[in-house]
Amino acid sequence: MFSYRHAFHAGNHADVLKHAMLLGILRHLTQKDSPLVVVDTHAGAGLYRLDGDYAGTSGEASDGVVKLFAALAPADPTRGVAIKEIAPMLQDYMETVAGFNPSGQLKIYPGSPFIVQTLLREEARDKLKLFEMHPTDSKALAANIAQLKAGRQVAAARLDGFEGLKAFLPPPSRRALVLIDPSYEIKSDYQKVSSCIQDSLKRFATGTYAIWYPVIPRPEAHELPRRLKTLATQAGKPWLHATLAIGQADERNVPGEPERGQGLTASGIFVINPPHTLKPALAAALPQLLQVLGRGRGKGQTLETGG
Ligand code: SAM
Image 1 (cartoon, rainbow, N blue to C red):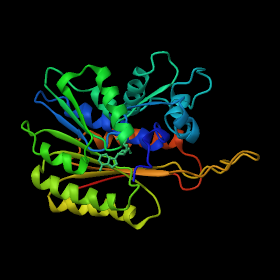
Image 2 (cartoon, rainbow, N blue to C red):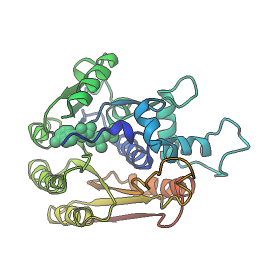
Image 3 (cartoon, rainbow, N blue to C red):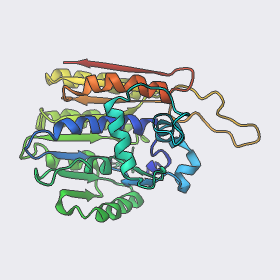
Image 4 (tube, protein in one colour):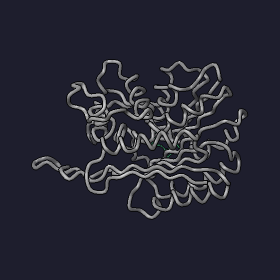
Protein backbone atom coordinates (compact mmCIF):
# COMPACT_ATOMS: atom_id res chain seq x y z
CA MET A 1 0.00 0.00 0.00
CA PHE A 2 2.77 2.43 0.83
CA SER A 3 4.78 2.38 -2.37
CA TYR A 4 3.88 6.00 -3.20
CA ARG A 5 6.39 8.61 -2.04
CA HIS A 6 5.62 12.18 -2.97
CA ALA A 7 9.35 13.03 -2.96
CA PHE A 8 9.60 11.45 -6.45
CA HIS A 9 6.96 13.82 -7.76
CA ALA A 10 7.50 17.01 -5.74
CA GLY A 11 7.38 20.14 -7.87
CA ASN A 12 5.99 18.39 -10.96
CA HIS A 13 3.35 20.06 -13.17
CA ALA A 14 0.54 18.63 -10.99
CA ASP A 15 2.08 20.19 -7.87
CA VAL A 16 2.44 23.51 -9.69
CA LEU A 17 -1.26 23.55 -10.58
CA LYS A 18 -2.37 22.30 -7.16
CA HIS A 19 -0.20 24.62 -5.09
CA ALA A 20 -0.83 27.72 -7.23
CA MET A 21 -4.58 27.09 -6.83
CA LEU A 22 -4.21 26.44 -3.11
CA LEU A 23 -2.62 29.87 -2.73
CA GLY A 24 -5.31 31.44 -4.90
CA ILE A 25 -8.02 29.99 -2.66
CA LEU A 26 -6.27 30.87 0.59
CA ARG A 27 -5.50 34.46 -0.40
CA HIS A 28 -9.24 34.99 -0.59
CA LEU A 29 -10.24 33.00 2.49
CA THR A 30 -7.72 34.78 4.72
CA GLN A 31 -9.22 38.18 3.94
CA LYS A 32 -12.02 37.74 6.47
CA ASP A 33 -11.10 38.23 10.12
CA SER A 34 -12.72 35.07 11.54
CA PRO A 35 -10.53 31.98 12.10
CA LEU A 36 -9.99 29.58 9.24
CA VAL A 37 -9.38 25.85 9.66
CA VAL A 38 -7.40 24.16 6.89
CA VAL A 39 -7.44 20.36 6.77
CA ASP A 40 -4.93 18.59 4.52
CA THR A 41 -6.12 14.96 4.51
CA HIS A 42 -3.06 13.61 2.63
CA ALA A 43 -0.21 15.87 3.68
CA GLY A 44 2.98 14.13 2.51
CA ALA A 45 6.33 14.96 4.12
CA GLY A 46 5.90 18.74 3.94
CA LEU A 47 9.31 19.68 2.50
CA TYR A 48 11.29 18.04 -0.31
CA ARG A 49 14.83 18.39 -1.61
CA LEU A 50 14.84 19.04 -5.34
CA ASP A 51 18.50 18.01 -5.52
CA GLY A 52 17.98 14.89 -3.38
CA ASP A 53 18.01 11.24 -4.49
CA TYR A 54 14.25 10.90 -4.92
CA ALA A 55 13.71 14.01 -7.01
CA GLY A 56 16.92 13.37 -8.94
CA THR A 57 15.74 9.86 -9.91
CA SER A 58 12.44 10.92 -11.43
CA GLY A 59 13.36 14.44 -12.54
CA GLU A 60 9.68 15.41 -12.50
CA ALA A 61 10.33 18.91 -11.15
CA SER A 62 12.25 19.67 -14.35
CA ASP A 63 8.91 19.53 -16.21
CA GLY A 64 7.23 21.56 -13.47
CA VAL A 65 8.52 24.12 -11.03
CA VAL A 66 12.08 24.18 -12.42
CA LYS A 67 10.79 24.82 -15.95
CA LEU A 68 8.42 27.52 -14.68
CA PHE A 69 11.22 29.39 -12.93
CA ALA A 70 13.56 28.99 -15.92
CA ALA A 71 10.88 30.48 -18.18
CA LEU A 72 9.44 33.23 -16.00
CA ALA A 73 12.30 34.11 -13.63
CA PRO A 74 15.43 33.10 -15.56
CA ALA A 75 18.87 33.76 -14.10
CA ASP A 76 19.76 35.19 -17.53
CA PRO A 77 16.90 37.58 -18.44
CA THR A 78 17.49 37.09 -22.19
CA ARG A 79 16.61 33.40 -21.96
CA GLY A 80 13.07 33.32 -20.50
CA VAL A 81 9.72 32.94 -22.22
CA ALA A 82 8.28 36.28 -23.26
CA ILE A 83 5.14 36.83 -21.22
CA LYS A 84 4.18 40.46 -20.83
CA GLU A 85 2.56 40.22 -17.44
CA ILE A 86 2.86 37.11 -15.30
CA ALA A 87 -0.56 36.04 -13.93
CA PRO A 88 -0.83 37.12 -10.26
CA MET A 89 -1.58 33.53 -9.17
CA LEU A 90 1.67 32.30 -10.74
CA GLN A 91 3.60 35.27 -9.40
CA ASP A 92 2.30 34.49 -5.93
CA TYR A 93 3.21 30.80 -6.31
CA MET A 94 6.73 31.59 -7.51
CA GLU A 95 7.32 34.09 -4.72
CA THR A 96 6.14 31.53 -2.16
CA VAL A 97 8.46 28.81 -3.51
CA ALA A 98 11.31 31.33 -3.76
CA GLY A 99 10.78 32.16 -0.09
CA PHE A 100 11.96 28.61 0.75
CA ASN A 101 15.07 29.08 -1.39
CA PRO A 102 16.82 32.20 -0.14
CA SER A 103 20.04 31.31 -2.01
CA GLY A 104 18.20 31.95 -5.26
CA GLN A 105 18.73 28.35 -6.40
CA LEU A 106 15.75 25.97 -6.35
CA LYS A 107 16.77 23.36 -3.80
CA ILE A 108 13.75 22.97 -1.55
CA TYR A 109 10.18 22.39 -2.64
CA PRO A 110 7.40 23.18 -0.16
CA GLY A 111 4.53 20.69 -0.11
CA SER A 112 0.94 21.65 0.65
CA PRO A 113 1.37 21.94 4.48
CA PHE A 114 4.17 24.47 4.08
CA ILE A 115 2.46 26.36 1.27
CA VAL A 116 -0.63 26.71 3.49
CA GLN A 117 1.36 27.62 6.58
CA THR A 118 2.87 30.69 4.87
CA LEU A 119 -0.62 32.24 4.80
CA LEU A 120 -1.96 31.27 8.22
CA ARG A 121 -2.63 34.22 10.52
CA GLU A 122 -1.66 34.01 14.15
CA GLU A 123 -3.91 36.91 15.14
CA ALA A 124 -6.96 35.32 13.52
CA ARG A 125 -6.16 31.99 15.20
CA ASP A 126 -6.16 30.03 11.93
CA LYS A 127 -5.38 26.34 12.31
CA LEU A 128 -3.85 23.69 10.06
CA LYS A 129 -4.68 19.99 10.62
CA LEU A 130 -2.56 17.46 8.77
CA PHE A 131 -2.94 13.73 8.18
CA GLU A 132 -0.24 11.48 6.74
CA MET A 133 -0.25 7.69 7.02
CA HIS A 134 3.11 6.70 5.53
CA PRO A 135 5.44 5.73 8.39
CA THR A 136 8.51 7.53 6.97
CA ASP A 137 6.70 10.54 5.56
CA SER A 138 4.68 11.09 8.73
CA LYS A 139 7.93 11.14 10.74
CA ALA A 140 9.51 13.56 8.26
CA LEU A 141 6.38 15.71 8.39
CA ALA A 142 6.46 15.84 12.20
CA ALA A 143 10.15 16.82 12.16
CA ASN A 144 9.59 19.49 9.49
CA ILE A 145 6.60 20.91 11.34
CA ALA A 146 8.57 21.01 14.62
CA GLN A 147 11.10 23.34 12.95
CA LEU A 148 8.34 25.85 12.25
CA LYS A 149 7.80 26.41 15.96
CA ALA A 150 4.17 27.06 15.08
CA GLY A 151 2.91 25.65 18.39
CA ARG A 152 -0.75 24.70 18.35
CA GLN A 153 -1.39 26.39 15.02
CA VAL A 154 -0.25 23.28 13.13
CA ALA A 155 -1.00 19.71 14.17
CA ALA A 156 -0.08 16.50 12.34
CA ALA A 157 -1.40 12.99 12.97
CA ARG A 158 -0.49 9.60 11.51
CA LEU A 159 -4.10 8.69 10.79
CA ASP A 160 -6.33 8.01 7.81
CA GLY A 161 -7.20 11.49 6.52
CA PHE A 162 -10.60 10.42 5.17
CA GLU A 163 -11.60 9.39 8.69
CA GLY A 164 -9.68 12.07 10.60
CA LEU A 165 -11.37 14.88 8.67
CA LYS A 166 -14.76 14.06 10.21
CA ALA A 167 -13.72 15.34 13.64
CA PHE A 168 -13.16 18.86 12.23
CA LEU A 169 -16.46 19.33 10.40
CA PRO A 170 -18.12 21.65 11.01
CA PRO A 171 -15.42 23.85 12.54
CA PRO A 172 -16.55 26.22 15.34
CA SER A 173 -15.80 29.27 13.16
CA ARG A 174 -17.79 27.77 10.27
CA ARG A 175 -14.90 28.54 7.92
CA ALA A 176 -12.76 25.75 6.48
CA LEU A 177 -10.69 24.75 3.49
CA VAL A 178 -10.22 21.01 2.98
CA LEU A 179 -7.55 19.74 0.59
CA ILE A 180 -8.01 16.11 -0.45
CA ASP A 181 -4.92 14.95 -2.29
CA PRO A 182 -4.55 11.16 -2.22
CA SER A 183 -1.98 9.30 -4.29
CA TYR A 184 -4.70 7.05 -5.84
CA GLU A 185 -2.22 4.18 -5.78
CA ILE A 186 -5.12 1.98 -4.78
CA LYS A 187 -8.28 2.04 -6.88
CA SER A 188 -10.52 2.40 -3.82
CA ASP A 189 -9.18 5.95 -3.25
CA TYR A 190 -11.52 7.25 -5.98
CA GLN A 191 -14.57 5.83 -4.21
CA LYS A 192 -13.25 7.02 -0.84
CA VAL A 193 -12.94 10.58 -2.17
CA SER A 194 -16.57 10.56 -3.36
CA SER A 195 -17.86 9.13 -0.09
CA CYS A 196 -15.74 11.58 1.89
CA ILE A 197 -17.17 14.55 -0.05
CA GLN A 198 -20.71 13.25 0.29
CA ASP A 199 -20.29 12.88 4.04
CA SER A 200 -18.43 16.20 4.42
CA LEU A 201 -21.13 18.16 2.57
CA LYS A 202 -23.68 16.72 4.99
CA ARG A 203 -21.59 17.76 7.97
CA PHE A 204 -20.54 21.14 6.60
CA ALA A 205 -22.07 22.22 3.29
CA THR A 206 -20.46 25.68 3.13
CA GLY A 207 -16.82 24.57 3.44
CA THR A 208 -14.44 24.92 0.52
CA TYR A 209 -13.25 21.52 -0.73
CA ALA A 210 -10.36 21.14 -3.18
CA ILE A 211 -9.84 17.67 -4.62
CA TRP A 212 -6.83 16.75 -6.74
CA TYR A 213 -6.97 13.81 -9.16
CA PRO A 214 -4.80 12.39 -11.96
CA VAL A 215 -6.09 12.53 -15.53
CA ILE A 216 -5.22 9.01 -16.63
CA PRO A 217 -6.89 6.39 -18.84
CA ARG A 218 -8.70 4.66 -16.01
CA PRO A 219 -12.51 4.60 -15.70
CA GLU A 220 -12.43 5.64 -12.02
CA ALA A 221 -10.33 8.72 -12.86
CA HIS A 222 -12.77 9.80 -15.62
CA GLU A 223 -15.72 9.17 -13.36
CA LEU A 224 -14.46 11.12 -10.32
CA PRO A 225 -15.01 14.71 -11.59
CA ARG A 226 -18.43 13.69 -12.93
CA ARG A 227 -19.37 12.23 -9.57
CA LEU A 228 -18.11 15.35 -7.77
CA LYS A 229 -20.19 17.58 -10.05
CA THR A 230 -23.25 15.51 -9.18
CA LEU A 231 -22.55 15.71 -5.44
CA ALA A 232 -22.00 19.49 -5.54
CA THR A 233 -25.12 20.00 -7.65
CA GLN A 234 -27.24 17.81 -5.35
CA ALA A 235 -26.03 19.87 -2.38
CA GLY A 236 -26.88 23.07 -4.32
CA LYS A 237 -23.26 24.29 -4.14
CA PRO A 238 -21.14 25.99 -6.80
CA TRP A 239 -18.08 24.23 -8.20
CA LEU A 240 -15.01 24.87 -10.34
CA HIS A 241 -13.06 22.31 -12.32
CA ALA A 242 -9.61 23.00 -13.79
CA THR A 243 -7.28 20.65 -15.68
CA LEU A 244 -3.80 21.02 -17.09
CA ALA A 245 -2.28 18.55 -19.56
CA ILE A 246 1.36 19.06 -20.49
CA GLY A 247 1.14 16.44 -23.25
CA GLN A 248 3.67 13.90 -24.44
CA ALA A 249 7.42 14.37 -24.35
CA ASP A 250 8.53 13.01 -27.71
CA GLU A 251 12.23 13.29 -27.08
CA ARG A 252 12.00 11.67 -23.64
CA ASN A 253 14.39 8.83 -24.36
CA VAL A 254 18.05 9.51 -25.03
CA PRO A 255 19.91 6.76 -26.94
CA GLY A 256 22.21 4.87 -24.59
CA GLU A 257 20.38 6.01 -21.45
CA PRO A 258 17.76 3.99 -19.52
CA GLU A 259 14.24 4.40 -20.96
CA ARG A 260 12.01 6.93 -19.23
CA GLY A 261 8.23 6.72 -19.31
CA GLN A 262 5.98 9.68 -19.93
CA GLY A 263 4.98 9.77 -16.26
CA LEU A 264 1.81 11.63 -15.37
CA THR A 265 0.95 14.04 -18.18
CA ALA A 266 -2.26 15.65 -16.86
CA SER A 267 -4.14 16.36 -13.66
CA GLY A 268 -7.23 18.14 -12.44
CA ILE A 269 -8.53 19.97 -9.41
CA PHE A 270 -12.18 20.09 -8.49
CA VAL A 271 -13.25 22.78 -6.03
CA ILE A 272 -16.62 22.92 -4.27
CA ASN A 273 -17.61 26.38 -2.98
CA PRO A 274 -14.69 28.11 -4.75
CA PRO A 275 -13.99 31.76 -3.93
CA HIS A 276 -15.42 34.00 -6.67
CA THR A 277 -11.86 35.23 -7.36
CA LEU A 278 -10.60 31.77 -8.34
CA LYS A 279 -12.05 31.57 -11.84
CA PRO A 280 -10.63 34.87 -13.14
CA ALA A 281 -7.30 34.10 -11.47
CA LEU A 282 -7.14 30.73 -13.24
CA ALA A 283 -8.35 32.16 -16.53
CA ALA A 284 -5.17 34.27 -16.48
CA ALA A 285 -2.84 31.60 -15.07
CA LEU A 286 -3.80 28.43 -16.98
CA PRO A 287 -2.89 29.64 -20.50
CA GLN A 288 0.49 30.80 -19.19
CA LEU A 289 1.07 27.47 -17.44
CA LEU A 290 0.29 25.71 -20.70
CA GLN A 291 2.55 28.02 -22.69
CA VAL A 292 5.46 27.36 -20.34
CA LEU A 293 4.96 23.72 -19.30
CA GLY A 294 3.19 22.33 -22.40
CA ARG A 295 5.27 19.76 -24.30
CA GLY A 296 3.66 17.90 -27.20
CA ARG A 297 0.68 15.86 -28.31
CA GLY A 298 -2.28 16.01 -25.89
CA LYS A 299 -1.42 19.30 -24.20
CA GLY A 300 -4.26 21.57 -23.14
CA GLN A 301 -6.13 23.18 -20.32
CA THR A 302 -9.77 23.40 -19.29
CA LEU A 303 -11.67 25.59 -16.87
CA GLU A 304 -15.36 25.18 -16.14
CA THR A 305 -17.70 26.21 -13.39
CA GLY A 306 -21.23 25.33 -12.42
CA GLY A 307 -23.85 25.40 -9.72
N1 SAM B 1 -0.66 17.00 -0.31
C1 SAM B 1 0.77 16.80 -0.51
C2 SAM B 1 1.33 18.02 -1.21
O1 SAM B 1 0.63 18.62 -2.04
O2 SAM B 1 2.47 18.40 -0.94
C3 SAM B 1 1.08 15.56 -1.32
C4 SAM B 1 0.38 14.33 -0.85
S1 SAM B 1 0.71 12.88 -1.74
C5 SAM B 1 -0.03 13.14 -3.30
C6 SAM B 1 -0.38 11.74 -0.96
C7 SAM B 1 0.06 11.32 0.43
O3 SAM B 1 -1.00 10.64 1.09
C8 SAM B 1 1.23 10.34 0.46
O4 SAM B 1 2.28 10.89 1.20
C9 SAM B 1 0.67 9.07 1.13
O5 SAM B 1 1.61 8.44 1.97
C10 SAM B 1 -0.47 9.64 1.93
N2 SAM B 1 -1.60 8.73 2.24
C11 SAM B 1 -2.05 7.66 1.54
N3 SAM B 1 -3.22 7.22 2.06
C12 SAM B 1 -3.51 8.03 3.11
C13 SAM B 1 -4.63 8.15 4.01
N4 SAM B 1 -5.67 7.30 3.94
N5 SAM B 1 -4.62 9.13 4.93
C14 SAM B 1 -3.58 10.00 5.02
N6 SAM B 1 -2.52 9.97 4.19
C15 SAM B 1 -2.49 9.01 3.24
